Length: 236
Ligand code: APR
Image (tube, rainbow, N blue to C red; front, side, top):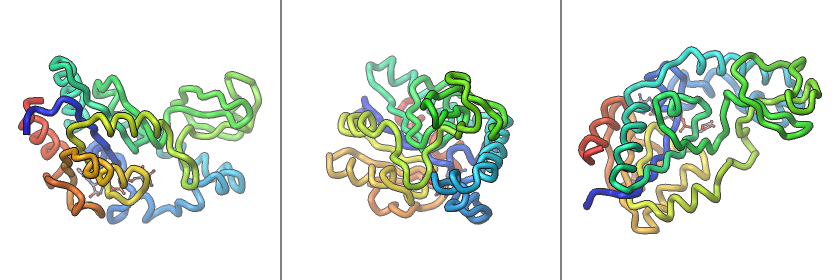
C-alpha cells in the first residue's frame, strides 16, 4: 500500500492500560467490579447522584495521577509527521481521559466525552473540572448547585461528534483500531463501515477483539510496542 495520507485511528481503554488506567472488559476490569447500570446511566445519576459522582471522582483522580505512555506519544508523533506530509491523522477516542492530549496530540475527538470536564444539567454549560464533583458543586456559569455531572456519555445516551467522525471515516485511506474490544457501538461498527468504503483496516490490540474478523491486518501485543512498531513501519 502507498503511504497512507489520511489515517483514522480509533482508540479504546487498552491504549491507556499501560498508564495504569483500568480497562472495562478485561478480567478484573471496571465492569467486572462495578455495575455499569448502577453507575453509568442517566437513570442511575437521577436515582443516586452521590454514588455516581463518587465513582467518577475515583476515576478522575486516577486520570489526574496517570501519565501518558509510549502508545499515546507514538500517536502524537504520527499526527505531526503526517501533517508534515500534507496528510491527516484523525484521532477518535472512546476514552474519557486526557492522556492523548498530554502526550501532544493536538486534535482529539472524544466520542464518549471527557472526565476532566463537568456539565451543568441546568444550563448545559461545560466547564473544565479536575477536582471532585459533588452535589454541593455549583455551576460556574449559572451558579446553580446540585446540577453538575461528568461530561461523559452514559449508556443510553448519544455519543458525541458523530457527524465529524463519519466525515473523517469517509475521507480515510487507512483505519486503525487500538486497544478496544469492539463491544460498544457505534464505535465497534466503524471497521465494517471502513471495509465497505474499500479502506484498509488494521487492529492493534492485546488479543483479538470481538470484531477481529473484520480487519485486513492485525498486530497483537501491548499498544506501547505493537502500535509504535506499526506506525514506524509506516514511517510515522
Ligand atoms: N495494549 C493494547 N490493548 C490492550 C492492552 C494493552 N496494554 N490492555 C488491554 N487491551 C485491550 C483488551 O484486550 C481489550 O480488547 O483493550 C481492550 C479494552 O476493551 P474494553 O475494556 O472493552 O474497553 P473499550 O473497548 O474502550 O470499551 C468501549 O465501553 O463501557 C464503555 O464507555 C466505555 O469507552 C468505553 C467503551
